[in-house]
Image 1: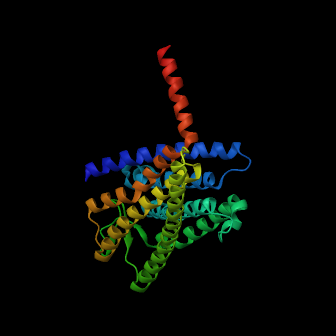
Image 2: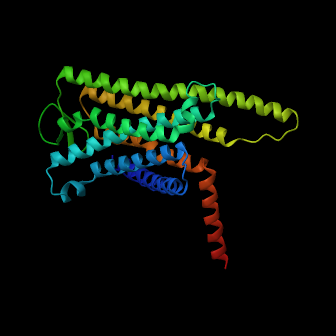
Image 3: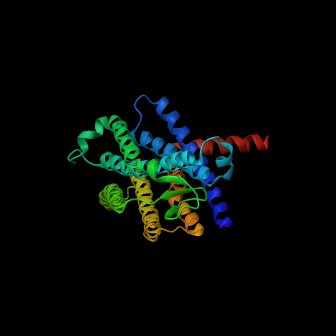
Length: 304
């Protein structure tokens, strides 16, 4: 269990650094550009959400945090678990929004959503307002049912310090249906968007093969590279999310959390927040150019 916790600390550390770099880069880009790209705005928001989410889980695991703050443990648990669930909801919303943005960006003018293309950035900002409102309200039950860990019976431990008190069966079923419907909706959007992007990439590949057949050197367009990146993100998110749902569902059904299962769930639940900024950084030529320039300067200074 201790080794798994160390793995999580290492993973979360990388995730925080990568997301912080991505966040600062896109903040600077948005500040410099009077007409920022909608993907820059969405990526900046996603990086911020993941930073808060990773820090929140680190605080949940930290004994020093619970000892140092002069607040009742109940209040600390309620705040941390509520923030974590809100950020987790915003992560799935923003990822699905990113897939929709890419679909609109690459689609022709005949596409039904193409009318949003020219004011897409403002629509994205409005979407963030609805996402935050929905996530804050839909996870409000965490404030009611989260308690500090105690020797009470019929509670579900979600960390060493925090637990969930038992719910009324009807309320639990309603909450489960609401959460499941929300998740299915956003994952469904991701899958539909992915199918559309796969069709686009397939057509683009055929066009590239045709150009190659007439001795024209085919190049991967920026739209294609961005589409491939979003496809990787969506695919990875869906896989990790399904694993997380399976682990969480079994734990809730049995109303029992094993410490090892807790650590595995944290790893699975937060690995997307760590991997996604690395994928976005490695696929962005602007960032790669800056990093290459920094490396060149460092080599020159080292050699001089």
